[in-house]
Amino acid sequence: MIIDDIYQIFKDYYGEDKVDLQTVGVNTDIKECYNSSDYEHYGDYIIVVHWPEVTVSNEFDASIVIWDLYAAIFVSPVGILRGYPLFNRSTYDNAQWVSRYMHSHTPGINVDSRSLSRFTSSCLGNGPLVNTTHILRATCDMDRWNLLCWELDKYVRVESLSGGPYKRLQNVSLSGKREHVSEVCIKPRLGLSSVSKEALIDLTSRLMEKLINDKVLKFSYNNGKYEIGVPYLSAVLDISNCFIEMYNSNKEIRKTYTKDYLFDKLIIEHKCISNNMIYTKGDGKDSIIGVLNTPLFTFKGNKVLLKLKDFEQDYTANEVILLNLNIIDYILYNLLKHINLKYGKSTDTISEKSRVL
Image 1 (cartoon, rainbow, N blue to C red):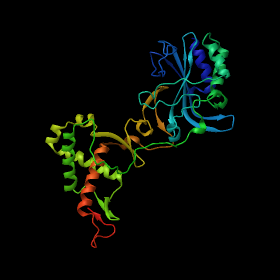
Image 2 (cartoon, one colour; image 1 turned 90 degrees about the horizontal axis):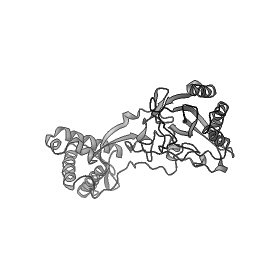
Image 3 (cartoon, rainbow, N blue to C red; image 1 turned 135 degrees about the horizontal axis):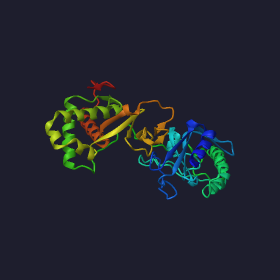
Image 4 (cartoon, rainbow, N blue to C red; image 1 turned 90 degrees about the vertical axis):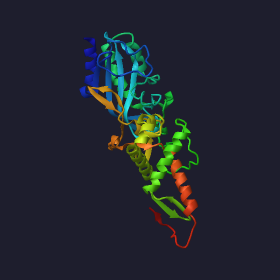
């Protein structure tokens, strides 16, 4: 078969462990970003190339290292190239993710968890790869397929500033990174549009009573006022655990508010915790944490998962259920207001800093 000969060319150039042959409609889950008619014809073949590590350099000797770059080359049964090579990546560091840098030639990363698996097109510029792909889209030429392997390998290692790259490697940085702020936020009003005011008042009143009676939180006295005596994240976990305990032990609450109701109304939420920061599960807009281990596609029979470079943590162990942070901040605000109004006056009997259990 012609496809076997073409696949052998790729294996000879890149190595058998770096390439995979899949069949559209039979054994592939690779999809193109825009569902173009140039791709995904039933019975066509896909040759997938994997670069574990690539150094991308430009004409000013600037460079960047990227990891786990994949190219998908769609081929008809008679050896005609469909469309152009498409690209995806499975491993990023924080700076590249925040900068949306997949490669200088690609538009960027679609960070929606449902789109991460899709391969995207790239700008071929005016390089020799353009001419080779045009020829292979019209005819099957084994010499040209050999040339495409070489040109594709060179193409992914170069950023041409004169060609106007989508993403300049010099702009990759952590600047502008936004994360959930792990500190108390003043919430004098309790607002959560997804749930009724009556339900919120009922649940928060019950919870505040339990927090006080069980002495869940610790407070410290400093510079004439009472403050939370533990880090914000610890307070979030303590309040959330108290809410879960209250819910599990109270049949009346469980009957009034089902677990599905609590999740649907965002009263409780799935979150991820990393480096003392709280991230929304499944939210990859600013941080990769929420979408780590998302299945992307299959390569040589194994699922390729989204990874963070040089981060060996078991991310699933950091998934927790937390009370909505708006509710927590409202509760903390009211507790601190009550304590400071009642006990916050400086006296000779109160040391500069003491803890209230």
